[in-house]
Amino acid sequence: MNQVASNLVTRVLLAVLAAGLVMLQFGCSVARTTSGPERKDMSVLDHGTPRGNVITELGSPVHTEMVDGNKVDYFKFEQGNHVAGKAAKGLLYGVAAVATLGVSEVVANPVEGATNSAEVQVKVTYDANDMIIKSEFIEDKRIFKGDSPTTADAG
Image (cartoon, rainbow, N blue to C red):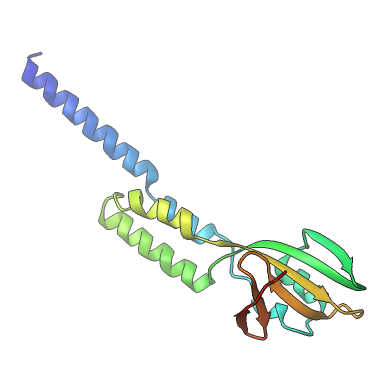
């Protein structure tokens, strides 16, 4: 085999290998988008909500303690996307992957991995009847008052 043919074979093999690596990524962003956690209904953190409703929506608390005679639960969960949003993003990523023969996955997969959901930590205080009297976001110091979070020191 002469030098020109050898270089051509090497280039073709490298192109096939590169295409194969791109195709391995094909569909990963779609899978990440559609398999992520669903959005939690944060209205369960409103004043007066029964503890059972909170646990049903957010899952079991990671820690429970008594503070000044009140039960306090600490929750940690991933706040996902709405189902319709997940479907739309999945469709968009799928169309982009097909249209670009998978090349869009090089960008979409890491972006989706980094932005798919946010970790939320909440402190919830209940009265003697296990009804919410106070809800606080721990990490960013937001306190829920009805539907509108306000900035305050969560102490």
